[in-house]
Amino acid sequence: MSLEDQVQQLATPIANELSIEILNVVMDGGSRSRLVKVIVDRRGGVSSDELVRISRGLSLQMDVEDVVVGKYHLEVTTPGFDWHLQNQADFDRYLGDWLKIVQENPPAIEGENLGLDGDAFSVRDEKGVVHRFGVKDVVKVTRAINWKAISKAQKKK
Image (tube, rainbow, N blue to C red):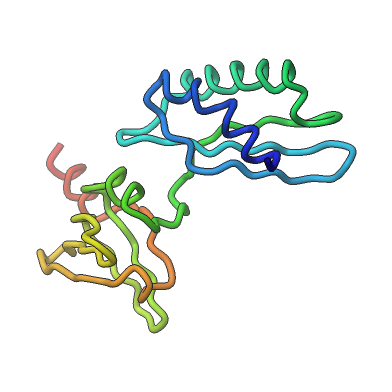
């Protein structure tokens, strides 16, 4: 079993208790010190207190199980806006969020995530036009900020 799998196995009960999903575990660094990065999220986001709870619990478990030999730095974080949406869980987690779709030939298209259906997903752009894309036909799909909607909301205040 890989180190990443061992860390995920230890983190899963802690994350499950908080209804948080573990998206990825990444190990980096050399023999002196390793970075153990655990990426977590859920629909609606994860609070900093919850990140701390996972980090503390996982750190204790890792030390008891002696998973990483030597020094390590544990980082428990959310994926951020640059997380590439790729599967049903990703599209479900960010349903209704504003997405940026990067294609081989620009320009990129932005719109509201209407969800993934099979191997294709749909977004509604700011003009209300629905666009459909095959997951394998795009370079990258990430969350974005709809600055026009924010600007409109600010003007109404």
